[in-house]
Structures are given as structure tokens and as C-alpha cells.
Image 1 (cartoon, one colour):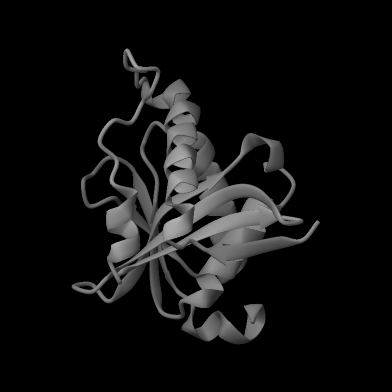
Image 2: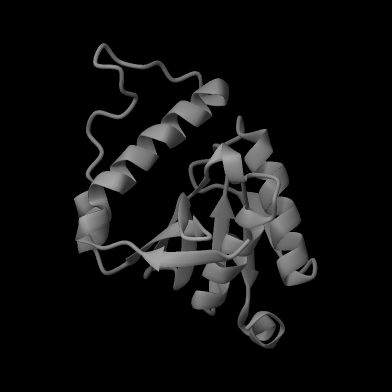
Amino acid sequence: MAVSLERISLDGLDTLKNLFELVAYDLSEWSGANINDNGLYLTSLDVRSLVDDSDYDLFFVRVDAVLAGFVVVKYLREEDLYYLNHFFILRKFRRQGVGKEAAIMVFDLHIGKWRVSEFEWNTPAQHFWIKVIRDYTMDQFVETRRKDNKGPAQEFMNVHLQVNHS
């Protein structure tokens, strides 16, 4: 099973918007979000702004060339760190190492300070990220709270890890 990242261009915006809708559906189990009368969760998502902003890096995750999810990384200039803004793997590809491999690939693309955060209600994501980050950093990370205090956040530096994962 070959996991790869594909940079998202303007041609992929409709696909990305569709995937965001799947994320909202997937998370509704824990978030309690309701679908609207048009059958959608998201009504005002502007994915074009993500592609147009140079502080964002967007990737589709593929498994053997099949679309399996996406990743959005935002560079926070004021803090000089990379923030894992969105990360989604389709259920079909979960529990097979796809998410972990995609996360490592993304971390290795941007060497420096990182932050990953989860909502308090998203305990599956919390378990996943603690395990991935603990393994990736060899337990060299700090857990804090999200800036909005809505859940945990993990921060780490991967400068010293470049040799181990490149």
C-alpha cells in the first residue's frame, strides 16, 4: 500500500470542498452538528481562500493513487510554527497506518516548530495524535491547551528529527 501526498491546485478545489463535507458528516457523531435543509453541513466554506493564501499548504492523501483524504497545514508567521489545520482520512483507509504515514510525510515536509490540536469532544483524534506524535518525536513533545481552550494541543520541534524520518 503506497501512501502519497499530492499538492492541491485550483483544479482540486471542488474535490476538497466535497471532502470537507465528509469531514463535517464524520465529526457530527461527536460534535452534534446538524445537517441543513439542503442536505449539507457546510454552507459558507471558501476553499479558494486556502489555495490563494501562501501560508497554507494543501495536500490530497492518496493510497495506491486512490483518493484517501487530505491535509491542510498553515504556517503561523506570528509564532513561526506550522499548524496542522485540517487532517482527514476516509474511514475505509483508517487503522491501516495510512494516517500515520501521511502525518509523518507532512511533518517531514516542514522542518521547525509544529502544533497539532484537537477538540475536547474528538477523543478518537486525541488518541490518534498522541500516538503518532509520541512515536514521531520519540516522546519529545509538550501537551498544552488549544488557544481557544476547546481541547488539547501538542507542540514539538522536528529539526533534530530530520535525519530519523527523511
